[in-house]
Amino acid sequence: MKVGTVPESDARRLMVDYVHAIDDGRLSDWPAFFTDPCLYRITTRQNVEQGMPLSIMLCDSQAMLYDRVEAIESANVFEPHHYRHILSDSCATPVACDGLRLETSFICVRTMLDGRQSLFAAGVYRDHVVNVGGRCLFRSRTVVLDSPQVDTLLAIPL
Amino acid sequence: MIADISTKVSWPEEGVRRIPYGVYSTPEIYDREKSAIFRGPIWHFLGLEAQIPETGMYVLAQVGETSVIVVRQADGNVEALVNRCSHKGTPLVYLPQGKTSRFLCIYHNWCFALNGRMLSAAFERGVGGKGGMASTFKKEDNGLQKMRVHRISGLIFGTFSDATPPFEDYAGADLVANIKRVCGRPLRVLGQYSQKLPSNWKLYIENVKDPYHASILHAFNGVMKQDRLTMEGGIVMGSRGWSHISYSKMSTDAGDAVYKDKSLRSGEITAYGQGLRDTSMTDIWDDFGDGVSMTIQTVFPNFVLQQLRNSLAVRTIVPKGTHESELRWIAFGYEDDDERKLNGRLKQANMMGPAGLIAMEDGMIGGLVQRGIAGDLDKAAVVEMGGHGIEPIPGSRVSEGSVRGFWTGYRTLMGL
Image (cartoon, rainbow over all chains, first blue to last red; front, side):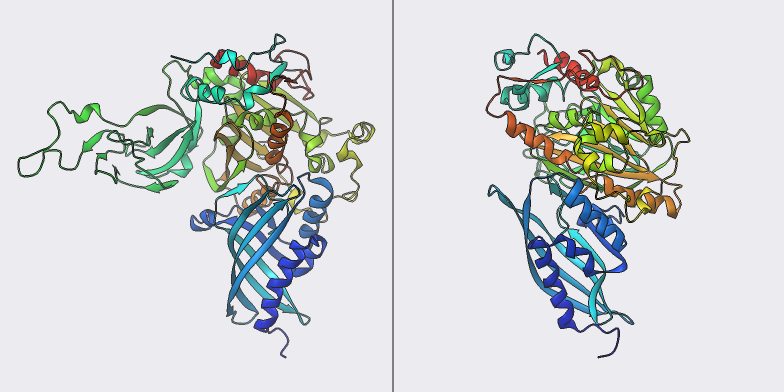
């Protein structure tokens, strides 16, 4: 395998491993899915269509991802809950010199500890996946939410 | 006939240092708010001028239960038109924003100019000389209902009532000055989103007006020394105490010992002992040359102007029933921001919104309160920090005076 190429099967595996890490509650593993520097952001379809740069969440380095994990685990207060992501198959397009671009639809069900359960988010992952030392990582992952509205709060990353 | 809501909720004799829980969940109270507050003598935020720079551009605002089209006129003015065709009541606009040359109802093609004047109706003279509108029908009497509009530093406010005082008198000089301070330069909209909150709208606006909680509930604030009550700061009250500004200066904190001694959660958190790993979010600058790093301002009843360091935004809390509300955010910067400032504001926006490192808990706390009080609606909240009244304590934010100020205005309009 040439250094720097991203086999599609590895990229698809990355999609699955990522959501399982989050859904299983292994938030401290989350930053390790990204390069450093990187780009992770959550925005809305409305902001994308209007060319507006605002994000709901924005991290552009490993350090910022770890800061976010620490905030969620130690500082921020919210009712404990779990996510369950369901993914579509990914559309993959090679990037001229580096990696793959992928688009993957998702829905995410949120379950509170008392059993309240709702469709929390639907949208698309827009990813740039690269090969770093034989491992597939996100150079950028943009989460575009279909709805302009979030129910209550968004603590755990999508 | 107006129902006597005092039989549903009676205000405790202590006055505004008690808040009867019934005001957050009683349907009759909610119904009265629609007329007494949202159609009453208040100025309601409608949008930013920067959202509608060109003739015919519009945004939809929500004033109580009423959808309002906020539209730029050819002469540069802004009109606020009730989004309801004068024929059957169909909404004329059903997209949150857009651009048009006139408002055409999809139901029967009634057509209105950008200023709300009625232009035409389909088949108004009938077909082939038969039918058509009755001779009593006059287009000039059937234009769209309007709000009175006031614009200040790029913010658009509207009111339904003729009794609403001029905006400057309604808000007060200090609050007008802060609006000009934060919004007095050409604004650039950076984006928007909203939050569905599982609580009555008043639980959110109380939360905004309560600096007491800011560094306690929002541990990130305290840990990051973003906004602690030991910083130099204060509360400024607006006209009649109904509106407020809470402010602080970030370079004046000496509160580690206080926060540790009081057994506050934020003082005990050691995870950030070394501070943030990535400090780019704290790479801030003084936008206004006055050293004031945080201002949270309200305009009664439901508007918030936010300056969290360099993260600037307006928020409106829209009632959606007794137990639900929608918090609408618009983030902005300035037209002359360079790339560093633009990126700084976008990065600092991590503090605000549904995923806000600081604001996150505000989305939840009202819903928790609503659950907590559900079985005891005959009881009342105790709001005595800083005394009984609405006078600010000079140099202190350890007060709920601004919360009592909101309820002073609320009781006046509601007759409670």
